[in-house]
Length: 251
Image (cartoon, rainbow, N blue to C red):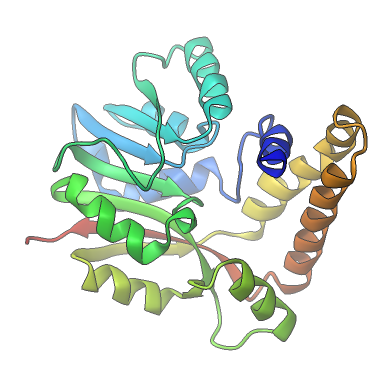
């Protein structure tokens, strides 16, 4: 529990809790063809402090249900939504993605940026499919190999952290086997990792350590993050988040 509390403390002030970018969310929206819709209902699962929720609420005629299991993130999201006059378009829900309290076929789209790994890609898309209306849209970003062969240090690290990491073609096959038709894919660029996620996090390290008395547990988290950053900097051409946009097919 101490580690989770420390991770929340480290990431709570970040705009993003993982690699991504507003322009990338907008690109996924364009690929989804949701712009033409009105009165849409969208679930943003694993929303963190709401980076993608805000883009969805601004870009679409939609009501966004922002879901996360961490109340601290949702508290900050609520405050920010009210400040930006988006509180009528964004509703927060504290829930685990393993047990979502939604009715079947109740959403026009389900979004999940950098979070589906918590339940697993294959499990997540199969479990969430029933919440989508016929022809509903699924848009998720997922750790993805960019090449068939990778440096050993990179492969060992990510297979240990997330055994489901795989190539885009393998992820597309899972989508197709799970009742979805892929309609778009792109890989996040370096700026999504470095400029939007890693560098802002590094800038928070000193204050994070000071708040937590330079404890051994806090220092261990910073050291682990620094190792991951260095690993990415050495190997950024081999791995990224792949952004997958797919449509629910008929049963």
